[in-house]
Amino acid sequence: LGGFLTQAANGKPAPPDAKAPKQQSAPPPPPPRLDFKGSEGVEELVLLLRRGTAEAQGKAAAAIAAAAAAGADEARQVVGAGGVAPLLLLLRAKGDAQEHAARAIMSMADSPEHQASLSAAGAIPAAVGLLRSGSLGVQDVAAGILGNLAIQSEPNQTAIVAAGALPGLVSLLAKGAAPAKEQACFALWNLACQHPPNQLAIAEAGAVRPLVALLSKGTPPVQEEAAGALMNLAAHPDNKRAIAAANAIAALVPMLSQGGGPAEQAAGALMNLASNNALNQASIVKAEALSPLVALLQTAPKSGEPASRRAREYAAGALMNLCLKQKPLQDRVAAAGAVPLLVGMLSEQAEGAQYEEAAGALTNLADTHEENQAAVGKAGAVPPLAALLRKPSASAQEEAAGTLMNLAACDANKDAIVSAGALPPLVALLGSGSAAAREHAAGALANLANGRPEHAEAVGAAKALPPLLALLQQAPEGKDAAALRGCGGAGVAARAASALALASLHAPNAAEVRSEGGVAVLATALGAGVSEAAAALVNVSKGDAAARDALLAAGGAALLVREVSAGAPAAQAEAAGAIATLAADSARLAEAVVAAGAVLPL
Image: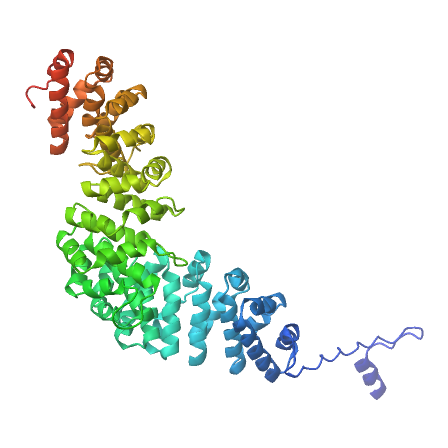
């Protein structure tokens, strides 16, 4: 019985010729963990990240972090050696190794060439995870990683917010140490830069009030970063009111006198807060910002360090927005000495210099303000503005043309503008510039020709008439048509028609307009609501029977009567004047306007 039981337990006996079952060999032992020696190159350090002891991994991560922070070439070597994946794995560790790995990734993320590869490898969710669960010392590095990945990268900006980074970043603003606050502000600054959805999302996440609080309570570096973040948030129209309601303006204005980065970013924030917001403009003026903004324009202030070029540009932009259509502020800013400082900025050749804000400030100072127009011209603005028309920057061309348009309204500036060679580039803008640039160029030509026959002749000689007619034919239809047609002299088509009207007071110019089919073009423009075309029709058609016949054939009599009957007051005046002049010149046209029902509305 015992033998049977033993056999049953052991299973069926093997036949005599059967082989014994093959024994499986044990797996090979793992390779020994490597130690850190201190003499490793980049590739050996990356190997240590994968196969080193815990201590060796931490030291290798520290060495790689130092190398990546040293410069772009070193960071490139780390990426090329395959260091990204093991560094991201180390973010799951604890202690020094985690922090060193995070710092290495932050340094590599500072280079745009590595942003895409880091994001593809999972750096964004890894950094967001560190914001939630990392130590205090690691959270600020995680914010720095996200801030670097967001620099000028719309896909990363979107992905970071989608990964849930905002609550952690906003929490750091209130609870983090100074380095963490600074890095959180930096990340929010870059996430909001030229990204309207993020600008709204950051405000909705509750960032505005803690950012404003840091303007008064933070260290200067934190103040700078907080003001920069608010500057980008204020670029969204829906955020301007909330930022002002959090008392940001009262905190930003004193920063203008601090100098350095805080003053620069404070000026930028005020510039955006003032843009197209009358309530904020009034609050900024009430907070006595004008004097420090003008002082910030100086290259050699009486006290303190000179402001950076960017700070001066932001100050100019703030003044530009504050002075728009504000006669009392135009007076005050000019009286504070801003004009020569702004004109000086137009001629500076600093690397990366932008000229739109300085030119824009001069444009608004000179707008319908004859004293300022003369002062800007006397300060020497015309030659550098004419030079800006030739620069490749479309926005600089647009602002320079706008300034010249306003300066040309002052008779004292007309000769200087023509002598500076501004006519050819202004004519070129009629066909190649933005809508605003075309409007400004046409307006400048109109103002130059107004009351100066020699300049009207020069406008024709500069070949301006065909592109001016083309602008009338290119006026868009639909929802933007009214804005671009303009009213009361504004708008591309309105400016073009005014320029044609004034240039056509010179008989050879009128003849050229007729030969280009201008009568029909102007009649069509009048029918589209460009009331300024009425004066152009008068000057082109007067004394020329064929032109009057073309006007009648184009239905000009009925169009003029329609403007007298139903147009705006300015349009009624233009049309009534046209009827008076043309009817006196032609009995046939007089009969036509009477037949069209002109008597009663006249």
